[in-house]
Figure 1 (tube, rainbow over the protein chains, first blue to last red):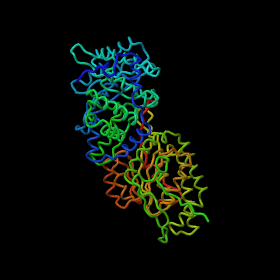
Figure 2 (cartoon, chains in turn orange, purple):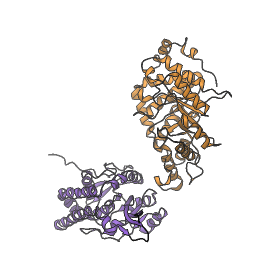
Figure 3 (spheres, each protein chain N blue to C red):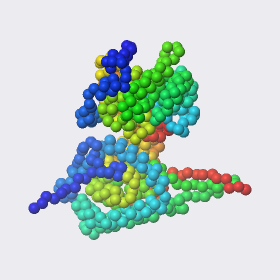
Figure 4 (cartoon, chains in turn purple, green):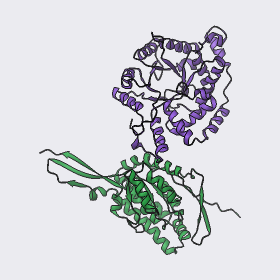
Length: 321
Length: 283
């Protein structure tokens, strides 16, 4: 994978002015066009074998998440067991991509997952608000990386972004990316959460996406799931356009992760249609597209059971979480 | 001269009046065979949506106090009384009954609601029990609602049969998906309007118009339905076998009268599960 050369992309030394000039020279988002395009893609009907493929892909792309203040070691362990065997009545059910937990739960998740090829993602950098000094954010990240997290979900400093201090946001992402490195040469994949619900406009979301990609994000993620507006289809489409354009110019492929508010299999299939039609087949893989979700899995499992047995399923037939 | 505004007869799902997801409608004729109205023809997707909302509404309805449920059911009777003329007109148009006979049917429907409303807070006293056991325990059997009920209203009744199918299911705190008589559905849609304005939480009663046989197997095989009332079904034996796969409570056609001004306690209890609790009482 080619390395990013931020200065070549921005066209000058990285300063707040040059970043600002670069970000504000991005084309504005056509709000009406974007929403109309998403609405038309949402009406597409996915049936039979395509639906079966889509449901399995949705599970494979899932970051099964528990991010509650009340999380315990036991709760994380039971979530991990669910990831290992999502549907005990049908062992052909694929496993989700990752378990997403708070940093202090990484150890327990790692232990419970054992040799299974399910990644552990940790939220870091004073998630969900991101209101802490850089020192604390880095310590938070290091702690999770040291505990064995395969992926780090960091939040950007929305306050700095909204007040136009792009350099600060950029520097923080770069600094976090550095501490994601391990001594053995591997690095924890960095997902940058833009918290789109707090960025107010589509134009800002586009700018934040580019800023995160410039700073070296492996993934850009919509939301923390902790604010009132979470992932939506138009926002996801906008971010998919950004990663596609980024790939076309730099040959660096970056992933997208919508998170929060995706609860039904029907929603998940709509997202997959948008991925296919916006970014293309290259993104239809868990390596470059993820769902951050907690209750989505059960709904997908019920739909899956409907496809395999022919009978509509119910909540009594999936595990409680 | 003005054009008369015709009513669109729609389904009743989750407290709302949607058209069928399939977009289908079917013709309903009056007793003389003349065209009367186009009515929504429910599909299996409407069945699926109804079960989802019925399930989510059920715990709230079961959790309401028995007194409160009684009040709500009584309120439905009040509202039925207020719409009497409309029901009488619809019954007469559909079945060709005389005004007196139609009024009698509405009377029975209202009286049956009141009869059922009275039972909400009395079921426990009559059907629950303190069991004598050989040990220092209180041993109490109580009746709990079974959950989501699917029901097929009798095909030969426009109103009272429907009322005597819905009421026994919801008295104890179940939610219900009811498929109406295919040829006599108009009063059912009017009943839905009554329910909608009666403080009944959305999703507790869901009314589907259409072909019972077409929808039957989807409801009987649905894993999230706990009991099924096969009164208005022609292929009952077949559905009974499907229902057995998921251990549903089943009421066979003809078990209870659906035309009287009152129901039967056993009909209510058929949609309940007995829970027995042991509690230490000291010495």
